[in-house]
Structure formats: structure tokens, C-alpha cells
Image 1 (cartoon, one colour):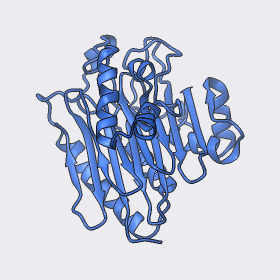
Image 2 (cartoon, one colour; image 1 turned 60 degrees about the vertical axis):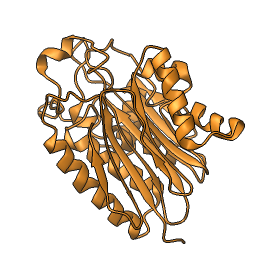
Image 3 (cartoon, helix red, strand yellow; image 1 turned 30 degrees about the horizontal axis):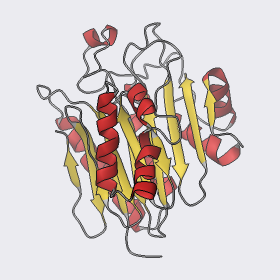
Image 4 (tube, one colour; image 1 turned 120 degrees about the vertical axis):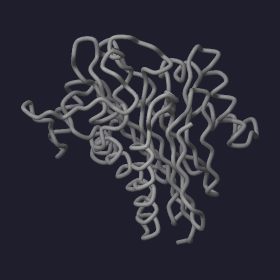
Length: 294
């Protein structure tokens, strides 16, 4: 075991500069310090990213978990994915309703099934069968995330209408992991699935790098997403920052915007975005935590 560790978080791309994000900044500041404490104590990367995303989902401050907004039929459908670099195993769920923490369901797929991605009612039943908490029909579970107004729920504005949460980590054993969760586009078509739950597009971890993406999922899918970044590094010899920026350029060509967070096996971190801001935080062994919105 080494003394090196690093973790990065994001609360989604897209920020309205006219709105107050102090609550988000406080939350990210507290959470990144909690994540650092757990990694210092030897927590694995896969457990660190799952726990971080659980807390991001539970806060209701982002378009994921409690912050997810209804689609055009009035239902909330969530997507999530998680991947463990050392084992190469991944799990995901998509278009899933009625589960408190979608990332827990994704972890259950990774840990207890031969599958990588489960959808819809099948994903929900699998999650409940494996100990995930159901949302009570009588409980007021969801809240609008910071920066989103009720009037925007029926207006699909790609500049504001998306959001995702994610975490990437390097643990003291050198393991990498990534986790990503979203409520998808606000006012989306029922059944719509973006890049988040697709291993290799919205979420990826291997022995070299861990990546979590956020933005317009269709454009990330068309641009190759996280695996395009790793391919540029492996086959093109590009540095992490160069490869990440180049992929986002293709996202823009495809008509989308967004960003990503990535950590490599040396603890280097990049957090590029081409959207109007991205909620993000990062800490590395021996350094003070940082939180930025714009």
C-alpha cells in the first residue's frame, strides 16, 4: 500500500451564473473532505466512488437520485453505472423507477450478477431483490435540484436541462474506479437512456484511468465517450488532458455539451468541460481540497 490517493466529484455540467450555488459549494466541500478521510483510512476506490455517489444522489441538489425530475409522462426514470478498474467488472441500470439510490442497484449488478446492464422493471426488481431501498409511494422523495425552476421541466433546453453526478478515485493500493448516476434530461421521453449507464461511454475505469462524464448523452454516445479518451491515450499517445479535450470537441461537433472528470494511475486529474460551468471537486494526497462551479 502506498500513501497516494485521489478522488474527484462532479455534480453535473451546466450552470446558470445568475443563480446561487452556495448550497452546492458547501455540500461538495463537505463531501470531498469526507471522501478524503475514507481514502486515507484505506477505503478501496470502488467503495469510495459508490459512497460518494450515494451521498450526491441523497442530497437532492443535483439531477440524480432525489434531484431527478419527471419525464413528460410524470415519472422519474434513473440511470447509473459503476466500474472497478482492478477487476474490470462493471454494473449498470437504466430507465429504472422507484429505487432510492440507483448507484446501489448498479453496484449490485456488478457484484452479484453476470450482467453489465439491466433496464426498466427488470432493473427495479433486481435492485429490490438485492436489498436496495424502494421509494415509498406515500413519501415526498424528490426535490428540484439547485438551478432548476418548475417552468423548465416542460422545456427541453440542452443548455440547462441535463445533469449527472459522478466520482472517480485512486486508492492507496493503486486501484481506480468510477461511478456515475443521473435522472436524465428534464422533460425527456419515457424510456430515453443517455450515456451514463453505458459502460465505456459515460463511465469507465481500468488499470490506467477512471472517467465519469456529464452532459448531453446522445452527443457523448456519438462521440465515443470515455473509451474514446482511453483509445486516444493508448493508441495515439495523447496525454489525459489532450485526449479528454479532444473527445469533448467531438461532443460539440455532435451538437452537445458537457464535461468529464478523470484520474489516472499516477493521481493526475483533469476536469474539462465545454458547458456553461460544471460543479466539481477534487482532492489528492498532500494537497488541499478544491471546489469549483464556474
